[in-house]
Length: 394
Image (tube, rainbow, N blue to C red):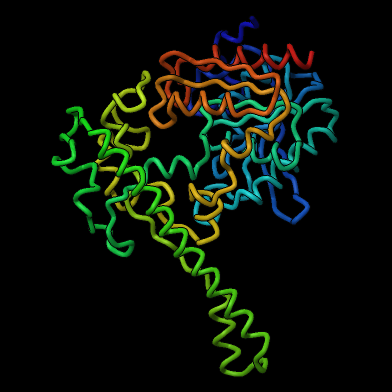
């Protein structure tokens, strides 16, 4: 195997988020700015081995995160590849993130790498980038290979397992249906750091209630979109400039925001007998008690969303970025790396993604004891990735 471990030395910029991610070879970096066909700006950093023009390019992106200094960038560039880590048009914008537009950004980045001489383009999806890259490949076929590292089964699928179904009223963050509250002692909860134990029959009811809440929020979002569409339609039939026209125009232009309360309530966080693997108790997003993070008003996934952003990204019922739907359409070579101590993505889900792939070339590795961001396992993991690419695109 290619050894990517070496003495750390500075290369003129930081590495996200650990300095030991820097390899011991000279790398070149170039700021990239691309304009998509629909006029959006995509920005990133292109990493290459100094003085070389690799024929295989790896592109990385997340729906909202900045992957220009992702840990994979310097390590894979050191292995001999061109690596473009970039941000979609929705950098740090969860509220209105549309996966359908993110796909355009991915395709634009892939096209740019081919314009620069890449004979092969590899789509690299980490975390929420996994479901994005699978959607992009399924819809556009812009990659010659697909790699998923700690890849979500879909951000909406993830939301479906963490949303709190005990919210009785979407306008009241304190409203609770006691029978559906995983943080109620009568349902098996114990104060942190004690382990909780949830009855499997109750858990089945809980999961169904999570899907029902997703459906209720979907209905709110669709109603808001329909109201705006109806107002725009009415405005077309009214006298331009009239009071009725102006009122219809206002309503047609208005975008209401949905406030999604309490989105950190997966019983598997506290009961490790649910979907057992090597994860520690708790969540990547907690501090450290999920109870606190679930109720903390200034933190939370999908806390404030437009109707469009919710349906496209965080709805487990409506988002198109769902591996169960997209992986069968990924026919190119597939590599999946799953960290077995990931607090957010279950071992079962990683194996399902492996089995759902439509490719006849599927490689799957479990990284024993690795957390979601692979701290302490990155050179090992990127060595697996580099060797896998080299075997297919020498």
